[in-house]
Length: 307
Image (tube, rainbow, N blue to C red):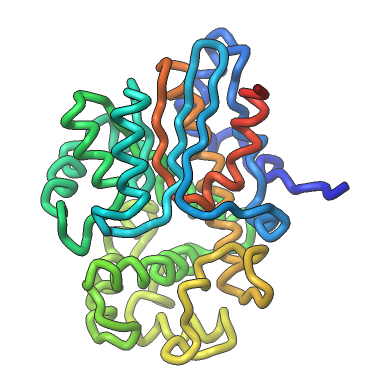
């Protein structure tokens, strides 16, 4: 029988968010979601994928968790957008957890409300922004599920990955998103240099590091050198969206996919910590995250809600 790795063994207690510390201080739930049950992204290739998008519902102990496993996109007629809308009308959630922005922004962050409205029907729209608009219309509170960049950088450092590696991986992960939103026309668009230079100071601030720590990847020119060193191929000819995928999801993983494993493991435990606290505090919770996240998080929910 296949023994799957658990990622929490590498995760010190200090990394877990304050929300989980609060949860531990209160009376335990019978249907308690345990973040340590999340699988490592290194095991992704051993898991059975499902066609996206889909909805999974977990219920028990007077609680209901509705998880929209999204297929990322910006088409308002897409099945993902329809499932998100149905999640609000059908489940009538009391609380929503969304992909793409840090938990530390707080409940109903005004910048997200403004941005979600500004991208309505535009190339930059996406299912989390739809969910923000629907939550506002329904009077439902929402939070982001993401850890801070500082927490990810600290976790990565314990696993042999530098802050520059994290930032470089973030750029790799953002390139397809920038192309969907038409910020970039192609991977060889000179605008990529502008995006990297603009993002680097903000990342350094969020991660609590000096900007000099990102010199290795702080411009398009240095980023290309870093990319080739990590992947063994030139960015101009070798880039593929799959560079951001977990190593276990590909028959030919590259160095970039090993970086993806580390960053993603840090994210998953935090995301599930936020979901666990939301379920403890609210009877019905709606989660909107990419389907790959649900695949590795599912054991934590299945253990909490065995029926």
